[in-house]
Every structure is written in structure tokens, then in C-alpha cells.
View (cartoon, rainbow, N blue to C red):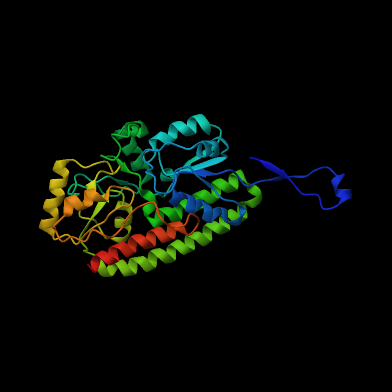
Amino acid sequence: MRHRLLPSLSLPLMLAPAVAVAEVPSVPVDIPPVHSLVARVMGELGSPDLVIQSGASPHGYSMRPSEARALSDADVVFFVSDELTPWLAKARASLAAEADAVELMEVPGTLHLTYRSGPTFEAHHHADEASSAHGEEHDEHGGHEAHADHDEHGHDGENPHGWLDPVNAHTWLGAIAESLAAQDPEHAATYRSNAQVGQQELEALTESLSARLAQVQGTRYIVFHDAYQYFEHRFDVPASGAISLGDASTPSPARVKEIQARVKQDDIQCVFREPQYNPALIESVFEGTGVKTSIVFEPLGVGLPLGETLYPQLIERLGQGILRCADA
């Protein structure tokens, strides 16, 4: 942790020994929603450093020199999981080996869901809320190493998009505050107070959005990739399928054909697009179906101002997408 010297207020004080005051920790984070949660806890004390820039896919990323420097200067690193960013584990090991690494999906009390099977989710797995069962699941799949290859990511195993459940985010705010308090005891009360205010804000948002979405349960829609299961589960608005795998890779012709059949069978109302991925794919798959394809539905807060308001705005925007689809 870095230190700074208090400024001298007068000439006599300049002759006195300098007094060192602890700075707030240097905190790199992986994605914009996590940056938002950490910024909420840090408040006016400081700001985290974003490693994966807005609009970029976390599943595979080449860091800029400034982002690598942020890791090398880290006191504590907050990241969702090695399943989401397998490449980041190597970068942390080489650049931030001495830093405290906080994997948010491993925080006790976090809800865990597994990827759903097939493009239309017929054989999906149920939530596993017990941390002990979650550990057994990792053993069955060979731990994090089973997902080390980007080409394998997203087909099965744990769905790492856990930040899209605001109840998970509520839990993480407390864990973030405690990690920062351990690094910076001088400001521990501020971190904890900021986290508590953030938790209260998320409770109010979750209650409000739950009431609104309860009016449109049964809305029939397809997402671009299987990233939204935590949001769907929390608000009971399940999707009918996903065009792409959980890592947003290009779907096979067989997968596209099955999705097209589901659109006709279930009278799908909307297909949500993600701005960072090829819009031509959406148009080619759903051309002539009459399905609404103009609603943006994405998991990272693309286009939202970076900072503490991004996370609640992201959750609200997802809810608004469902509401717009219901009116289609």
C-alpha cells in the first residue's frame, strides 16, 4: 500500500518530522459492473481501475499497458470468476502475485447457477445455493482448469454471470467493504457505511423491479447468449432460448435452425440484441418472422457512464427491456 506525506502548513511545521498517512488501496477490477460496485464502496476515498474496457468481451481480452500496470500496482483485485475471465488468472499470477485476490463468485452466500443445455434450455440445471454443493460441482468438473480453454468456455458447468442477480451484488458489496477495510483499517467505517447504503439502494431497486416484472411474467423472448439466467431467475422472467453459447461464440447451423423452430412454435415476441456482437446475425436468423429485434439487452452496461450508478442502471435497463418486449 502506498503512502503520502501530509502537506506542510507553516514554516515551523516544515522542520518537524513528516507524518505518513495511509492511502486507500490500489484496486483493479475486471468488468464495469464490478467497477460500479467497488466505486460505490470506495465513495469519495478513491476509484478502482478498470482492466477490461467497456464494450469488450471479458471471455477473451488483450490488456493495454496501462491496464497491466494497474494490476502490477494492485493491493487488492476484485473479479467475478476464473470461469468468466480464464486469461486473467495468468495475468494476476504474473503481475499481481502479492495482491489480495477476491473472486466474487466464491463469496459465501452467492447464488450459483449452471449453464442451461441446448439453444432452447429444455434440460437446464437448477440453482445451487449451498456453498458446499458448489464446491462438489467444481470437483466434478475438474475445477477452474476445466474452463481454461476459451473454446470450451460457456458450453456447460457454472454460469459465471452472477452479477446480474442484484441479491448477489448485495452480498458482494459487504465482501468488498470487508476486503477494503482489511487493507485500509483507517477508513474501514467509511467502506462499511458506503456498502450499507448501496445495499439499501439495491433492495429498493429489486423490490420495485420485481413488482413491475410480476405484471409481465410469461413474456416470450430469446437472448443473444446465455448470460442472463441470474436476472431471469431473480425476477421469474425466463428466456425461451439463446442464439449463442454462454461465451457468445458463433452458433452452429443446427443451433440456428432449432432457434428458428422455437420462434414459430412458441410465438416468440422478441429477440434481444447485444451491441458488441454482429447485428447481421440477428437479422439473418429472424428475417421475415415478425419478431421484434430492436431491443438492446446486454450484461456489462455498455453505453452507461462508468461509476457507482452503472450497476443499478444496468439492472433497471434489463427490466425495461423485458417490459418493452411485453408491449411488443
